[in-house]
Length: 575
Image (cartoon, rainbow, N blue to C red):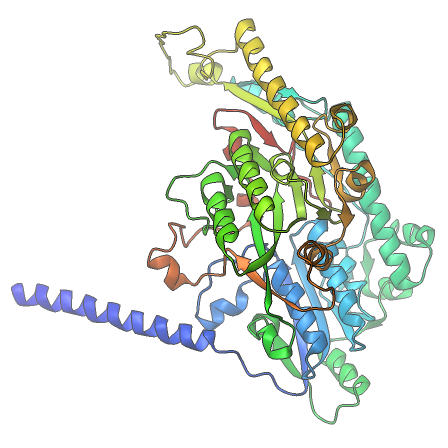
């Protein structure tokens, strides 16, 4: 028996050593820049979510190839491809995208920038919807398979309400908020949109749809009215899409690459280079980096307090503990000449947002700083950006939502249905204010309203000071209302419309770096490998899912915690 146990333990140790050696070997192979053939076409295959922060990297080739790039990596790859003589063209193949309109506008603008290199940019679509087609309109030629369909049929916004379900379960939810548009919690207390919600969502839908019509009309050389009329007949079979002038040709994949080869007058077949492979080419090898260093600090997800052990490297949203540590690292790094803080957050806990706001302001005093907003930078995501520095966002960014909310469920009815009873003893007048076994009493409601009102005034004051305006000018456009970036620009809540390029231009101006001088981007937090996670650089769960449906439950998870929140009233997805 003893020999058996010794053999078993020895086997485990040897297996572990082999695994470590294999991981190290794969990491070395993964770390070496790949070779790129001279006659290459870059395949820009974008699918599903495209995050702002890099997920954990698996050095196993098959897994690594399936990992989606970040928005910054797509931006960088397109810049490199424009300057790389080995890349002769780009073939855009978007599919089942699950990203917002801010990221769509960034990638579309990057594609347009690539076209200025004079290299072909073609799009080959596979059962595209509105998002995929929106990106494809940046190409100089759009292909669709003969048997495929184009699901371009307009836009819709849907909201979901649970009050009737909760009534059946015996659950009552009380919500208090500052700002008449701060309707977070309506999903639990109403059965349909409030007039304020309907007003905001209609304005968002009008602007996004108008932008879509404009982009398509410019790309397809039609008037917006013609495009509107065409879309009213969607979705389209492939031949219908071609007849309507929405696509150029109906071809299969081999035919698409055959025509591209003819267009390039290439005697050799084009070699396909995957985006996952090309992003590993260093920008420095193409002369695109300089000696001056700009930090790109990414904050993505809901805002919470976090634990004291949080190092800011995990992908579990923006935590005050972790993000402030990253801010201090950037602040103390003497090699950093400027900072672009990239925000993609619907907000979250007020106290956590305030801690991050303070550290952001300390960073702003030490380093030239610019704020770049992604799909969403609202409520706490907007709060943390109030440093007085330039704010850049996309026309489709969701921002503003300057307001505060508190919600509390009363589960007594549900407990009764389950045969559960609670008996409570208290000391202190408001000791039971957050109980889930009874509704709030009038004195408790008044107590909460005082706190909510004070927090709201503080939020508006911070906005007024950062935007260099009077409180009376900001408060009417606050009220918890969500604005699109284009609307926020008109209201003075942001400074400029644009993405990475514009943010870098502005931070170079603040850092007194000549506009023509190249800079190097330093990512915070950096991309990490599975080996680094396993050996303790982060407590992150390596199996954490990045499925959109699970990620969107985060708002509910935040809401169930006690305290005041500055959070987006809803998740907006326009299809």
